[in-house]
Image (cartoon, rainbow, N blue to C red):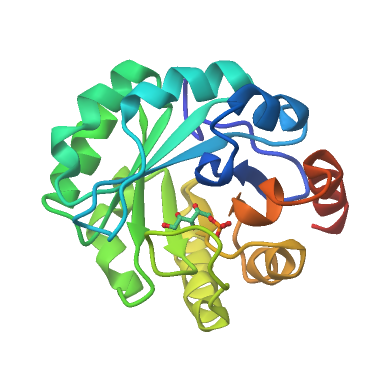
Length: 225
Ligand code: DX5
């Protein structure tokens, strides 16, 4: 698939459920009700080294894709992402995001592109935006973490908004259709703040899957953004 790898909704930010917060006893039950309301889904991969938590590996990607009927982006919060790129590509991820702080991040971005997938680069809250500059021409997505990576259900960090705004300026100046993704603590209120700062892809985990009616939550968000 040609860039931007995911359908770009008109007039609103893309909504990207994070399956980290889904019900793993019934993935289909979690994802089927929202498939027509979300734009793609994110698999949050954690290795227990880069972040103090372990989640899942490439094996989950086909199940998430089948249960949601949506394309998958894999957010690798792992120390050595280069070891896993081929497995996530084979599993069917459409875009793979590595962290700028991880080993050989730049080489990983190039390898992801060489495999014909979208390449994302993620920044922890404490990592300056300038780390994306050397890779800008290769990137399809920049992920600004609005929580410390490792766990869902954390509070949004409003101090990340200036970084989102600066990333928006950088992307617009680059003239490339790079997605600007905000991830962490996104709910109805913080979604507006993140989108208002220029994010055009919002990763939503606990606020979505803990909602009484997740489909209604997404419908409401689509109207608000
Ligand atoms: C943190 C994860 C979470 C997740 C979203 O490492 O990346 O940000 O995707 O979880 P919520 O929406 O619950 O913050």
